[in-house]
Length: 61
Image 1 (tube, rainbow, N blue to C red):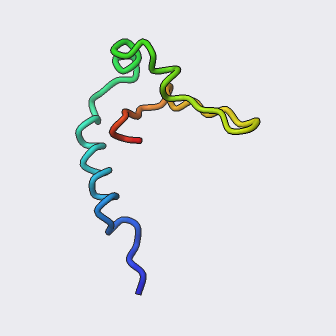
Image 2 (cartoon, rainbow, N blue to C red):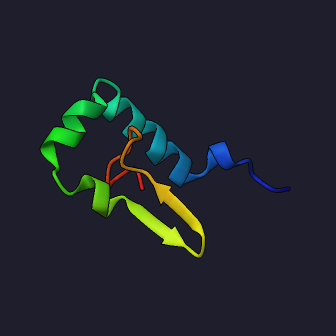
């Protein structure tokens, strides 16, 4: 039998992380890291992905 994703250690770690950053506001993350827009963006072929405007941290990723 295959275990569901929510029973994995990685999922449980992500749930704990969500609890840790629940009160964090995106404007605070942007203010604390002037290079966030560069660090949390990537381009693959014609696809540009910008994680910087999402409530994520290095730990999240």
